[in-house]
Amino acid sequence: MARLLLSLLVCVLCSCFVATAKLPNIVFVLVDDWGFADVGFRNPAISSPNFDQLAKTGLVLNRHYVFKYCAPSRASLLTGRWPHHVYQWNLATDATAGTNLNMTMFPAKLKAANYSTHMVGKWHQGFFDPRYLPINRGFDTSSGFLCGSEDHMTQNAICAIDYWKNNAPDPRNGTYDAYIYRDDLTDIINSHNTDEPLFLYLPLHNVHLPLQAPKEWLDIYPANSTCDKRHTLQAMVSVADNVTGHLVELLKKKGLWDNTIMVISADNGGAHCSGSNYPLRGCKETLFEGGVRSLAFVNGGLLPESRRGQSTDGFIHIADWYTTFCKLAGVDPDDSGTGKFSVDGLDVWPIITGENEKTQHEEIVLGYNFDFNHPGQGAIIVGNFKLLVGLQNAFECDSLGWRPLNYPCSNGLEGPDCDPYCLYDIINDPTEKNDLSKKNPEILSKLLDRYHSYSMEPRDMQDQGYHSQFSVPRDPDACKYMQSNGGYWRPWKNL
Ligand SMILES: *[C@@H]1O[C@H](CO)[C@@H](O)[C@H](O)[C@H]1NC(C)=O
Ligand SMILES: *[C@@H]1O[C@H](CO)[C@@H](O)[C@H](O)[C@H]1NC(C)=O
Ligand SMILES: *[C@@H]1O[C@H](CO)[C@@H](O)[C@H](O)[C@H]1NC(C)=O
Ligand SMILES: *[C@@H]1O[C@H](CO)[C@@H](O)[C@H](O)[C@H]1NC(C)=O
Ligand SMILES: *[C@@H]1O[C@H](CO)[C@@H](O)[C@H](O)[C@H]1NC(C)=O
Image (cartoon, rainbow, N blue to C red; front, side, top):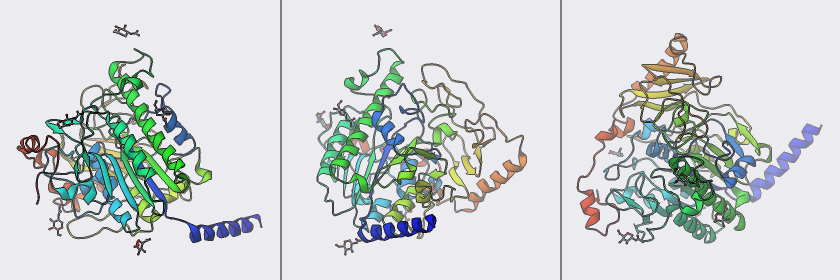
C-alpha cells in the first residue's frame, strides 16, 4: 500500500515536472592534468573548499575514464566517440588538422533545443582553418586559447600570443588566465537570458604546465612544506577551485542552479613529477589507472537528493556525456554518416540517478593501436578486467610506479612495464599491483580477442588516418604568419 501511494505520488510529481520543466542547464568543468588525489577531499595537503563541498553534497564518480592526455580526451567528450574513433594524438600549435568537421560536437546538437552555448578556457581541437573554431562547432560564444598550452601569465605560446574571443584575438593578454576566465563567467551568467537553457563548457588551463600561480595563492600554503613544483601545483588547484566556486555562486544568484547538472572532471591523470594520483598507479601519458581513471564528480540542483553525499562505481567514459546530455536536452544523439564512426557514448543518466548503476558498456576502449612512442599500444576494460597492450611510456620520474600521497618530492615505487601485456582485475586490484597476464591466459585471450576485434574496422578512419602525432601535418611558416599578422595565434588557412 505504502508502495502504491509512493508510486502514485511519484507519478503526480513526474507529470508536474513534465508540464512545467524547463530543459536542464548543463555545465561541464574540465580541469587540466588534475591528479586523482589533487583535491582536498582526497588529500588534506590541498586547499579546495569549493570542490570539497561540491563532492560532499554531490556524487563522486569513482570510475570515470578518460584518455591518457589532453586533445583526444576533449575530442572524445565533444564528439562522443572512443578516442581511436576520433584521434589519439595531441595537436601541435602549428598543426594543420583538427577534430573531424563531419562529426557534430554536442554543443551543436544542443543548439537544436535552443540552448545558449558558451565556452571559456582551452580549446585544443584545431584552428588552422576558421571552420575548426569553437564558434563554428556549436558555441555561441568562446573565450580563451586555441592551442594546448601557453604561459598562464602572458598567454604566449611558442612565438605568438594565444588569446581568442569568438572571431578575433582578445587583447586582454597579460593577466593570469584563470582570472580572465572568472571575469568572462561573470559576464556570461549575468547576461544569460533565463528563458533559454544554458550549456557552459569550462575547460580550465589549470593545473597544466607551465607550473605558474599568482603569489596570493602560493601564499596560502606554508613555505617549504613541499618542493617548488608541488607547491605551485597546489596553488593552481586552489585557483581552479576558486573559479569553479565563483561559477557556482553566479549560477545560484541568477537562479539557475536548481535546474542545473554540473559535471567536474580531469581530462587525464596528474602529470609526472607534479601531480598526485595516489593510490593509483602511473600518471598522465600512461594507460595505467593513474593516467585514465579521472577525478570526477557531479552536482547541481538536478542531482537527486538520494545521490547526495554518495559515490558510484558505475563505469563511465568521458564520451558518454555526449549521449547523456543530448538525452537530457531531448535531442537525438545520432551522428552517423559516411566517413566517420558513429557515436560510442551511452546514456549514463541512470548511473547518476542511481536507477541503474550497472554499466551499459560491454567494454570500454581506453586506447587502441596508437603509435606514440610504442606502436600498437592500447588498453581495454571488459567486466572486472583491464588489458594493457605494449610498453607504457616511461617518461621521467616514476611514471610506471605508485607514488606517495604528496608526490613528487619523495620517490614512489617503480613498477614493471607491460611487455607485451598487463592484465589486472581492477575491481579487486585497483592499484594494478598484480599482473595476471601470465597467470590467467584464458582471460588474457578473451580480452585480446575483444581488443583485436577493432582491427576489423577501417584503419584509415581510425585516428582520422594519422596514426602518429608525428604524421599530423604541420605548417613550418605558421609562426612567421602570426608574427606578421598582429602577433596573436589565429586561423591561417581557408580551405
Ligand atoms: C567528411 O565527409 C566527406 C563526405 O563523406 C568526405 O569527403 C570528407 O573527407 C570527410 N572529412 C573528413 C575530415 O573526414
Ligand atoms: C527553438 O526555437 C524555435 C524558434 O523560436 C522554435 O520554433 C522551436 O520550437 C524551439 N525548439 C525547442 C526544442 O524549444
Ligand atoms: C598582448 O599581446 C600583444 C601582441 O603580442 C602585445 O603587443 C601586448 O603588449 C600584450 N599585452 C600585454 C598586457 O602583455
Ligand atoms: C625555504 O627554503 C629556502 C631554501 O632552502 C630558504 O632559503 C628559505 O629561508 C626557506 N623559507 C622558510 C620560510 O623556511
Ligand atoms: C575566490 O577568491 C577570492 C580572493 O581570495 C575570494 O574573495 C572569494 O571569496 C573566492 N571565491 C570562492 C567562491 O571561493
